[in-house]
Amino acid sequence: MKRIVDTFNNIFAIEELRNRIVATMGFLLIFRLGSYVVLPGLDSTKLTKSTGGILGLLDTILGGAFSNASVFALGIMPYISASIVLQLLTIAIPYFQKMQKEGESGRKKINQITRLLTIVVTFFQSIGYVSATIPQDAILIDPFLFKASAILILISGTMFCMWLGERITDRGIGNGISMLIMVGIISRFPGAIYQEAASKGMSGALFFLVELIVLFFIVMAVILLTQATRRIPVQYAKQVVGGQTVGGQRQYIPLKLNTSGVMPIIFAQSLMFLPAMIASIWSDSSDLANSIGTTFSNYTSWQYNLVFGILILLFTFFYTAIAVNPQQMADDIKRNNGFIPGIKPGSPTSDFIDNVISRITLPGALFLVAIAILPAFASLFGLTREFAQFYGGTSLLIMVGVVLDTLQQVESYLLMKRYDGLMKSGRVKGRVDSSIAV
Image (cartoon, rainbow, N blue to C red; front, side, top):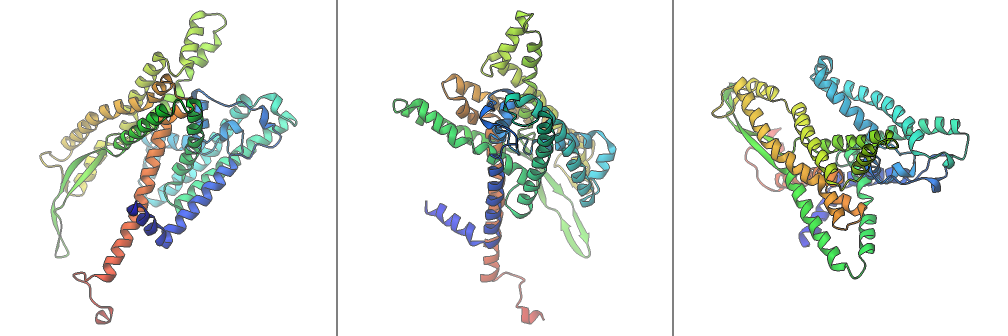
């Protein structure tokens, strides 16, 4: 306990880190307050909650802003969609590949294109949101005027959320976009715990305690999945530059067990609502279509989880293939006069890296499938739907990943403070007094 208190004291003793944490909390508070500001001209009491499918997933990620029909109803999701589209275009179109290699200027151009694409994506998503999710009896003003103003406000809300994310990244701590997503997810956690505890009552207090213990070990397993890496040693040859010998060091290429992150689950989840939607078209005339729609509307059915797991496996290999380029890694190693011990430079190095990625992707994908379908098993064991969603899936992976990334940044500030203290108090070889140097 004393160590934890000392860590917090060290964190707030660093002025820059303290200011960044305060700024981050302020920006996140603005984001959460905007999630409760309902679109003008709307009766919020007649809105329905989204509990299943992709709409339920969006509502969980956005912290209830989606079902509240707030000005941040679409949140940062259009920006993420635009970023994914641009990332795919970077792989497929040489123009974007060249732009990505231009350094800082190319990155600025890509960011500008992403912002413009975000406006386009938000425009179409806002039209679908206003038309499909808001009931007509909840609109208090002229429908055309409401739709026009709502689309404009939703676009402005998404751009403001994107601005908040950029400000958090620049002036706060952690990745701003990821922090906005995490705070939306974690805002549902206290309510989910309260509902679960209320449903169990005093008679089920022991079972509720067991649920919390199981959740703790699941979080530990997700941390292991997120942090697990396969290190490939790379030896760099010695060179003589300006009369000095440089290089000759051994470094490592850390290949993550789960390179694709949470993206396979998001892609698979977005496709799982299609069977039920297509089956609903022929549900009145076909018993088979009605049965398919009922089966794939139930996320605890074995058919749903089987298809869900297969899609996650496929998307994991697909996203890993487009995110990691073994040929480029081999070229970079060769260009810097490096080599993998026992492997020839060039194509053999590329083939070796590709084989390593293929071998670690399969267990990582299977582990990801297990994490993704855990909420279904949790619901079958009697947990409430809201609390079961934190037993795995997108919510848990995003929270763990963002928290780990933020803690790494905080740790870097603490390490810099310790190094500064060492430089000022101890005698370092090669350091001379400033007056002597002058």
